[in-house]
Amino acid sequence: MKYSVRPAQPADFQRIEEIYANARAFMTASGNPNQWGTTHPPKTLLERDIAGGNLYVLTEGELIHGVFYFFAGDDPTYARIQDGAWHCDRPYGTIHRIAGDGSGGILQAAVEFAAQRCQYLRIDTHADNAVMQRAIEKQGFQVCGTILTDDGTPRIAYDLIMLGGK
Image (cartoon, rainbow, N blue to C red):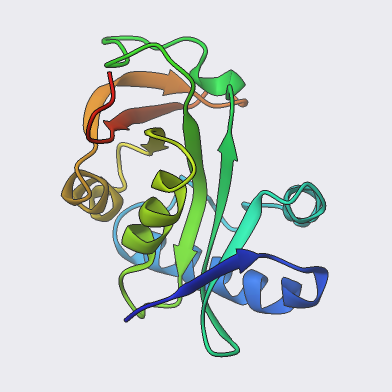
C-alpha cells in the first residue's frame, strides 16, 4: 500500500487515539504489555507533538492508517548510550511512537519519509517488542546499544546511515 504522509492536525486526534489504543492491545497480545502500558502516549504529549508539527499521519485517501513522531535534531534520550555506540556522530532524525491500524507498511513509509529529510536516522524499542525489533531490522537499522527513556526504562537503540553517509 502506498501512503501519503502529512502533519497531524487537531481534527485527527480521535483517529490517532484509536490507532494507539489498537497498538497497545497488539503489544499486550504479542508479549509486550509494559512498553506503552494502557495510557502511552498520553494526550498531552500527542497534543504537544501536533502543535510542534512533529506528529505525522499516514493516509490512503482520507483514511488515517498510521501515526509517528519525527524530529530532525538531538534527542535527549539518545545523548548517552550504554553497552555499545552509535555508528556515527552527526546530525540525525528520530522516529518515535510509531503505530498503525494493521494495514502494514507503516514503518517502511515512515522511514522513507524521514530519509528524505535526514540521511542518518535513529529509533528505539523495548526489549519485549520482538515484532518491532524485526520490523526495524528489516528496514536496515543496526543495533547500537541501550538508551534510557525519560522514566529510566531501557530501550534497544538502532541507527541507519543512508547511502553515502558516514
